[in-house]
Image (tube, rainbow, N blue to C red; front, side, top):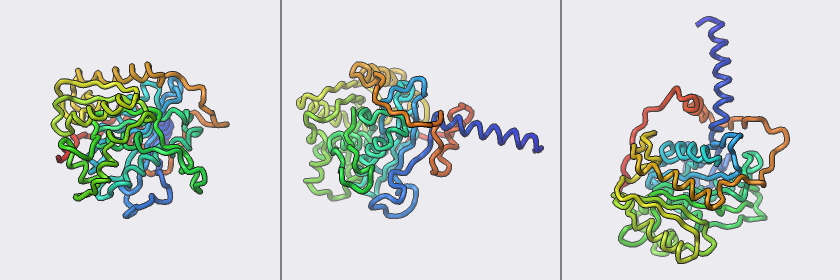
Length: 345
């Protein structure tokens, strides 16, 4: 390669990095100095969020933490994380895809990671240019259990904590749950998720505590729920008992059920391992209408713009997080995706 071509390529890559920052600002570790209870120093033991800012021209200040599924055994970061973030961006909503710890980690590690993500995003609201009072939570499958856990097990933070992040509330503004695991008890419990989250012989009181349909009260955030009636993996009963609990508590909730469909459909658009199911793909339009009707898509007037903030946030230090974003942003490169493995019952 000639010197001219090397310089041209270098300039192009530099421009691409800046452009990538507009759509995907990289991975940030929730505890940069090491997460409490970490078993080792591998990446899987470093919970993080990956930031997808809404376009500056359409951003409304609302944001959401996304909890991908995976049966508390793995985390389906692309199909139920990055792709969901990009959809939220089209609604003017900035998104943060959570990478949380899974088995061999057990409760309360997963809950602590998700609560920390809510606090972390809220603590950095000025830097992210979002409204700290308008941070929702979104979850799929076991990630739906995690999201509903945060929605029913939140607190207002510890005002005297030495870590400023821990001073923040972890309460979500709203919750969106797709084919969620909800209960840890009863005949329709998802056994694989329970074993991975609570171990092989969980205490009855712990199973009750993490059966989130039993933890709903009038202060629980409003919810949008979507599920297929014949879901073969996570039974519809999970969504139904949560819906019933929300209704009884007077919490606003909308539920969309499809007669037939698989578990793990994601956006149902044929991308990143999601099945191509046009009928089920309508759930995002229905959900966006619900968000609009609830006022969640109304532009916020409580966004504080930091002085001297550049047009694109600098890429965080986590190595390599931006490379996929460059090519994905331009549509010139796609990874080979495989369907996520089935969750054992």
